[in-house]
Image (tube, rainbow, N blue to C red; front, side, top):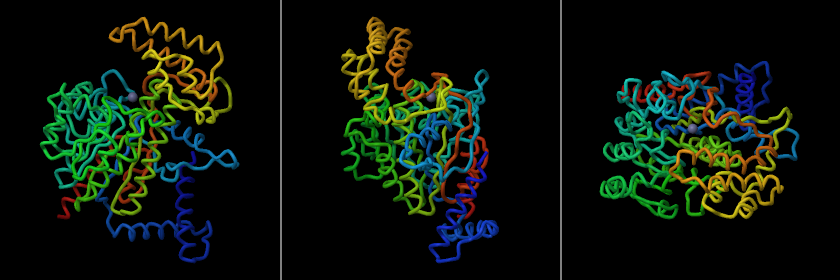
Length: 474
Ligand SMILES: [Zn+2]
């Protein structure tokens, strides 16, 4: 385990940078504890002698287990250098967290139970949205933030009513009650900025909530342009009917996760009392459920870019804490398979579209070889094509409403993705979640409380602590 080494290296590296900036003598390894002390004094100075953050940007890479972070390092590696370069995450690793839920049957969590732990500080059963094991509502950090006068935001590449955003601002006993979740967003109006997918839960099928939000003073937008032109501090942005397309497949007029996050920060930072913002890279999980390595790397890239941008914001605003973690891992994603000591990101880098995109096209009746050519950027061997065509034919005979449809669709997707998983030597063990601890990354005041191997519930407990102490100061 190289955690300690990694941390002291980071500290040493920043001290070296700091001392060379000051023209000081390069420190020796013997004086490392003095340097740590100097470092923490610097930290206090930089944050204006305040221990707690005014602003919190809490980032969730849904499904982003540790192998995803490592694979992303391989994926971003410059092949012309001997060492493997660090990713935007690596320098900010501060610990790991335990993700298990409090469920009568399952001890591997889903996003609802894990999200509720992150948002309320309580473990609960799989499927629970902001409620405990007795289905009683639990206060969330976003609700508390609003109570103490801060602005609030939820940003996700999934439907904004999906589990991870939902656990911060709604309370239902079942994550599938998405109309009710949307209704609660409107009724409670605790969230100033809501950006993501899921327009179908705000339209004519659900009380025309979008119109009601407009009347309540929100800018309601559905495109990147409209988002950038909107002037108000409250905005409901719904950029697709359901989940937003993966970054690699997304149309030009879709905002990226980073663009949505920036739009949120622009508005939330107007409040002198600060803000709480949750940002979710949701489709890391969704791509991993379907064992779609191209989709996974596309979404890791989107989440890394948002993390980088959040870091830049925190460095300009020293009263801002950024914490990034995952709610669980998905798919049993492995770096290498079939006894080979290798994982090759190059074929993934050459992909033009995700496995999900190709599957959607073919499931909607598009020509198989045209679609594979467009997705892979080249043809695949005749034998592979035959296998894909066979599964496509089977799917075409099943009605979408039939309960067998989803399983056959996954068989088609597996046939489409077999080539990229084999070429890259990516292994998968499940279409569900796995129970490994998740990495924690972060920067800013209050970070110490998140260090080490913590419980997922500690995230909310720490943020509640900040708000409690802030209350005492007033
Ligand atoms: Zn999932």
